[in-house]
Image (cartoon, rainbow, N blue to C red; front, top):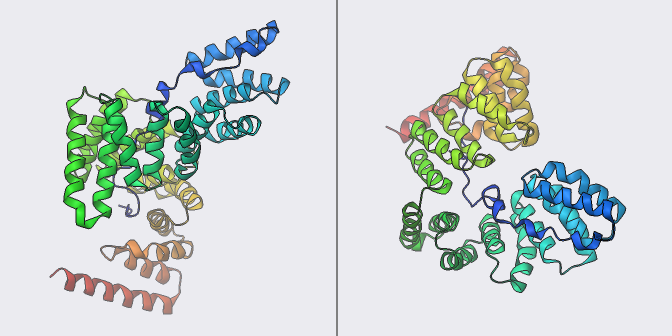
Amino acid sequence: MPSEKGFPASRSPRLLRLSQSSGWICAGLLCAGALWAQADQASEKLRQAREFVIAGKPEQAIPIYQELVGAVPNNPELLTDLCIAEFKAKRYRDAIGHAQAALRLRPDLLSANLFLGASYVGLDESAAAIPPLNKVLRTQPNDHNARLMLAQALSGAKRYEEATQQFGKLSELVPDNPKVWYGLGQTYDRLSQRTRGERKKYRELAQQAYDRLMRLPRSSEAYVHAAELRAESGEWAEAARQWREALKLAPDDGRIRTGLVWALYRSRDYEAALALIEGMRKGDADSAELNFLSGASWLNLEEPEKSIPYLEKAVGADSHSLPAQGALGQALLKTGRAKDAIPHLKAALPIDEDGSGHFQLFRAYKIAGQGEAAKQALSDYKGFTKRLRLANP
């Protein structure tokens, strides 16, 4: 099996995810209607676009808003409406551009700041999300959505102490929200890993947060937490079952889907993993992670030819992904392309845990006719396995 070291064990939504919370964000933020009251045709288009967004069809609203913005390009409210539709359609980069355009015209527009921050959170660009969300909270300190996203962003930026403060406030304001307790547990977990002297304290606080989460009505966050616990103990089939339950409650959450793919992959259910990935490609075809999982699954199914295009995409998207480098090297070696395999096998040596990577590199050099390099690689392999035996008598 290709090594997964360097990838998360169960690529899970370790923070609260926007795809689960965006439904809270009020459609009433669509704020440009009054400006068009005197223009019947424009008003009708605006009404239609608004109804598409409220009905959960933002993709159909976007071209209408684009037409309206084209007619009135310097209207910050219309730009924000377009931004909101793009955000709901998960076009986060486009939403950022239009939020920024609105804020150049009106820097104090709260809805533009809110969705600018939310879009950055959606892209995992946590540090960039913090300033606009802080602006919203300075004016509207009781905005639970902004505070939730700020807590996410702070945690994503590894500012865990500040994140726990925000989650702590939310636990008082909305104590029945499972996202809050899950997020609080996650940030305390991170602090326990970072702060050795206070590890026990933070672990206890994390457990208290998770206990509160599990006492609430069942939620996607509760199932995610259960899946993560199963993954930590290597119970991958049971972890997959928990991920499936989470997905029933949050069917549009791509990160829950990715967690399920990892669990299926680690439980060696490669066909199921591939089927799930295929349904995810439309939204994230260039994902290094999904391409690695596709390629590694095909490789484990003894289909190295099918694995190579996916693994090449994974390495192209993230050349520092050593699991993808190693898997690509294995696939190339198995298909008779030993010379092409060498640089990828060499790159993956730091994650070789049992000597198999060193041995494959030796074979690649030998098959490629590089005698001196093969001799050195064989010596390195013998030295590596000897050190392993001494370390594990």
